[in-house]
Length: 439
Image (tube, rainbow, N blue to C red):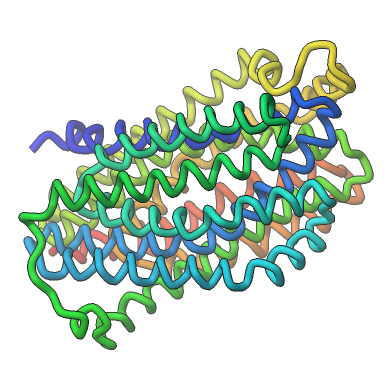
């Protein structure tokens, strides 16, 4: 078996899938920046997107919990468990999506108030909320497909979904004049289209590999307890990530300088571009770790982890070099030449661009370690490492903000990224506890 080929077979389609997501975010920010009153529109869109990131990230446990268990069952050749995992994950996803629609008003009003959002943010939220059930269902379907070592179907769907989203965003925002609310409605159209396409292709491709199951098996309490036990730790881990990202935008909005919010939003988009790229290798580590543990192939597991680490480092170095040489050109994509505050935004960005250059180096291995932990279903290590890293994040920010202002926010964010990977490495006894699972 060629490990590099296996890694790239999963990583490259996932990179293509993932890269469409920040591109969609970048296009949304570009649209907001070209609607007039760039700072206000970009800020409102940032707050709205952050609220939905909070929702989606808190639901991402469905994808990760599904992926790890499915991958181990796939490696062991257990078709019944893989079929049951598809049924359980979609059932849980549908229940979560419906609950979000029922609670949209209390959740939306509270989130908008906490994030200091205005009328524009409210319009965006109550339009985009109808995409949430579809988004959560895609988590379940894509998590199952990742566990089945299939990255092609999610890639095809991601491309289609994001093309639809971009096209509808441009149409709704400009010819129809719906502004940033049009971007929200574009999400609704795109996400539900994605669910329909994914469900159809998945059924067609795997219909002969699924076994007949009963409802009693799907809702088996022992199996559901295991599913939610793993996912409980992942939920806490995800809450920490959501808290740091959400606080990042909220703290930016409270810096008493609206230009900082716009600049931090744009710079964070550049980081997101890196994170979705390196996540492709994290997904490969996730799928292959689970597969080799299920197959009890310790040698392949060790080699896979080492090669995934190497690929992650290469990606981190490449992005740091890209941001070093072309940051000003990249920022120019987000704002219109000659627009109000353009020169001021670029001047502010120059002060903080060093953090965006440093973060890919600090975060490349932690992203990959997350993939290994998901594939090995080592959710407790993920939870504990994230709790410690989050405590450091807030401690650094509040202790240093009076002295270095916005730099304290970026220092806290960079340290948070680096520490979580370091902790996972040592909490797993330098990965020895992961390797023992394949013996």
